[in-house]
Length: 225
Ligand code: DX5
Ligand code: ZN
Image (cartoon, rainbow, N blue to C red; front, side):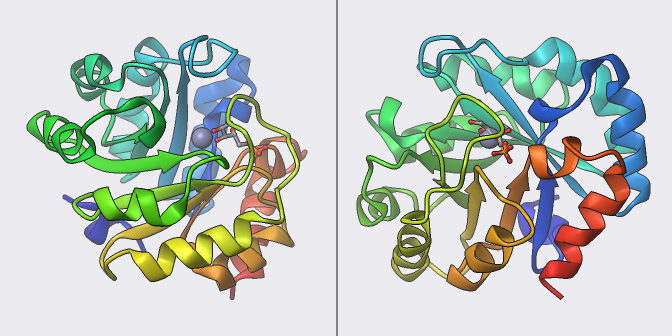
């Protein structure tokens, strides 16, 4: 199975980093029932980003439920040394890994290393990196992630300059590589990011910061209808 089989033209991806971890299984299940197909899972190492976030132990505890219900786990590695984490992520039930352009010398080789573990692959880049530079080396990836915040924490505001960066990235990439956006996606920014060319839209606090998770998820989906 590959990204092209998983996604339905466009996907809203709830970011589990923003979940209530005392009720993680319940929240995942409620969102799967509401129609979520792809979950975003943020691994932060305390070096590339300030916080230590969640990792393979948590991934392992939710992946059976997600897979049983037809879901996908899309892992965003906010870490200095992504390659060393690929085997553990794959063993814990991750389906896709997205590593950062900024920390890797050889992007095509890193993409190939992830594929050796049976993983789908994304390449992420920060607001300081140029979309065209990333696109020039990430053509073999399944997705390229344009960060619309400085990575590290949920609940930050969408950087408006990300819209132009998404559009430039879309133009520079082959058609079959998806553009993903992560950070500050809400009921308004989801529309402008989609119009700029993003088809995988990650949302943390806009879903988990609300009382009614299915309703928050569906509002984001409906905003694009
Ligand atoms: C933070 C993570 C994001 C985060 C998004 O750097 O990469 O996935 O959870 O959260 P929101 O949607 O609240 O900006
Ligand atoms: Zn993320």
